[in-house]
Image 1 (cartoon, rainbow, N blue to C red):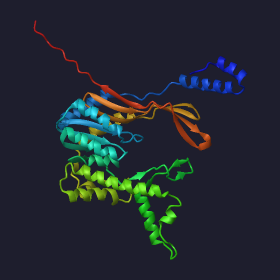
Image 2 (cartoon, one colour):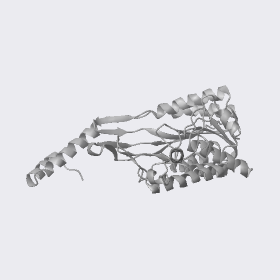
Image 3 (cartoon, rainbow, N blue to C red):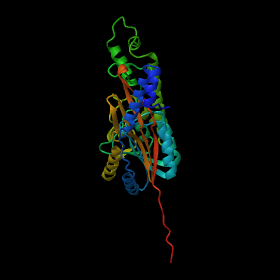
Image 4 (cartoon, helix red, strand yellow):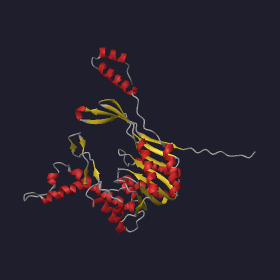
Length: 361
């Protein structure tokens, strides 16, 4: 329930100090409500025109699965994808444009399974970054077509646990990876002293034992899910196992770029994108990037509103996107931001085709 400045004055007389607090809250609310919220552009007509062109050129149904640098693959994407697939319907095959820096591992298996429910043959188009969890979706395709700027990455896990170490600079929890722990143990063993018992007595001073256990479990999960995804089109169990283990543990960095040549070397069915299709996909990426531009409205030095589009899924006549709709408040004493008034949600755009029936005179 709101309270007017006049009522706040009366409250101040009855309870000194309380009325002033209410008055300040009303003034802040009024100040925020008067701010003009920045809105990102919706470019549905432009992206639909390109998708129509791509479907004709590829002679196949087409889907975009695109996330911004601040977006990520998540469980809710499965529902959004289902709506898109239900709209365009099943057929013999589908072509999927994937651009993402990654996200959660578990949804990748559900996404792959859902796509295979509708389409027997799947082709992934990768003109740019297709990292981490996005790599797992791409390797689930029968064929991966990659452009000159394209790269996949390793799929080894990193996680931010409730008991993760805290970064003193911004008071945030630090993400820890399996590869980092492995290298710490390796360095410890190579520099151990006669009285040293085991590396974990030192590691546990900085990383909680439960975090170490959770990372090991997460790494096993990534390998298992990747192998299951590969099994949709690779029937050789040993090959699928080798590829999944290679992607999980054979690279020195999680962001190690796996180019077309390396993708072929590890056993993936990968070919080069044609220059025409690659250029068209880059044009589509520019449209999505414009939609996903930062849309931040500053209220004051400690508060701002975030209205950014993060994830976009699109096919012929339909686009579904996830958009932030929340306030951020900086807590100076704790050196961190908190979210307020979070109304972030998915939105859907559809193109309604109208047909005129011509009647004879």
